[in-house]
Image 1 (cartoon, rainbow, N blue to C red):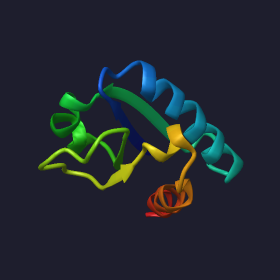
Image 2: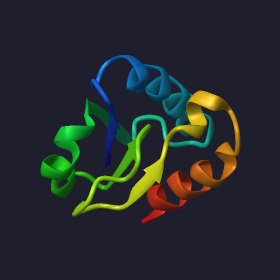
Image 3: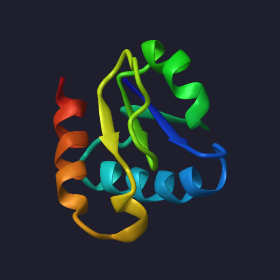
Image 4: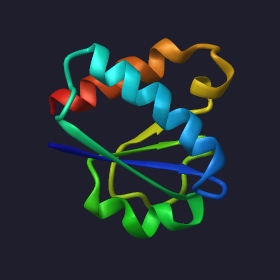
Length: 94
């Protein structure tokens, strides 16, 4: 089971939209039931990061993370998402 931290400015609006897209992508790639996504504010991400396998955020990477960072803005814009998708799929295999 992979624990994924998903962060945006408020931990509600933007991360909810991205959560739906990531859930769909992971399920379509055979990971249904093999992950848990937790949403948070980006200001909480550094403190929480040690408990998660990776962080997807719609902001810049916070400093001093204890887990890998995946850029998530592409899931909002639809531009250049494949690089982040590939990163997520690779992290799911670790």
